[in-house]
Image (cartoon, rainbow, N blue to C red; front, top):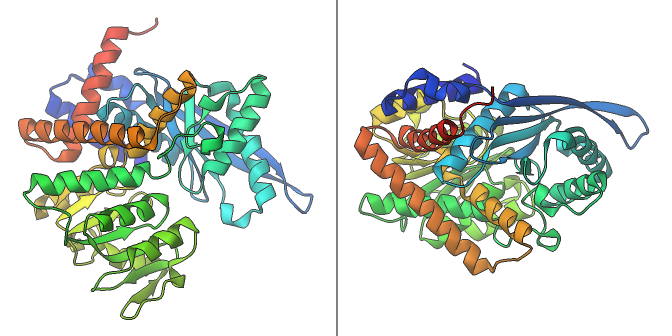
Amino acid sequence: MTKYESMLAVLENAAKKLGLCPSDYEALKYCERQLKVAIPVQMDDGNIKVFEGYRVQHSSARGPCKGGIRYHQDADMDDVMALAAWMSFKCAVVNIPYGGGKGGIKVDPGMLSAGELERLTRAYTAAIAPIVGVDKDIPAPDVNTNAQIMAWFVDTYSKITGHPSPGVVTGKPVELGGSLGRTEATGRGVSIIARELLKLYGTSVDGKRVAVQGNGNVGGVSIKMLAEQGAIITAVSDVSGAVFCEKGLDADKIFELSQARKSLKDYKQPGSKFVEGAKGNEQLLFADVDILVPAALERQIHKGNADKVRAKYIIEGANGPTTPEADDILCKKGVVLVPDILANAGGVIVSYFEWVQNLANCYWSLEKVNESLESQITGAFNEVVELSKKHDCTLRIAAYISAIQRIVTVRKLRGYFL
């Protein structure tokens, strides 16, 4: 089953629970636009290398498309299509006026110099410029992209259009119109969801044992903020492998490594154990913990390993880390899972705040950003919990029910252009 087919399986399940007829959601099975581009880049040695890039717009029914750009050697059209669709549902479940989009380039950015990375970004921006814009499609950072890459994107797009366009992307440096709190927003959202989920079960994060797969921006911030709530971080991984310590890892030092983009191989602590590569990442999924936060890439928990997961609660920091088959296994085991389209929506919520600030040319305090994020994401969580009770379904299906209801309602009101 491809990633896009996995998305369709969950969509069908939720739509049936909601009692929709096929024509109500047929359009959601397809992406409105798929753009594939060739990106020629002059490398430092003078040679020209051509990279493959993508931008997909899944649905614009509720507003401009919104979604990040990832630089990854495994990126392909199916990958980007699935991510774009998940963005449609993510924006809808937290009720912000966006549709879903996503972009990517098939590249290992670690193999490029800073100059090559800049030239690649600017060439990609020029290639997709005809279909993006402040009121059409607004990219943002994703895997292996960051505020600097968004700065190059804004500069290139502004030169192409002939006027400043800070709102064409979010996740920019604050000095270029970015929002305070945007960098930490996804991880902050994960920590808020953890608090609300545990509260729902009559307990708290304090004293709970936590494993986090991925020590990038999302994982690093999640670790820091969960530890601030009293969580004991016993396992963390990145692409190099995983570090384990039953007594608890130093969350501040782990966070510092994530911010400096340094490998967990550099982490040293008496009593800790490092397991290299993919083996370490898989072992982390089976750690004896209360809370598991998969915050790396898609399809980490699948039918071949879901029965080995020992966590009581899973909060998806990454997009699509659990396959539909694994969902069924986890549900039968009694694992409570908060899906990606809700759990990691903090980033797109604050991206929306950034876009609003750019349009108004009026900027918010960090306190206002964080208060607004908390209000938006807790409201969405409570709504999903109520839908889960009403329809006797998992939180994933309830989140999709919430999202589909909103998109289908707007689609019916708008009708179809004939």
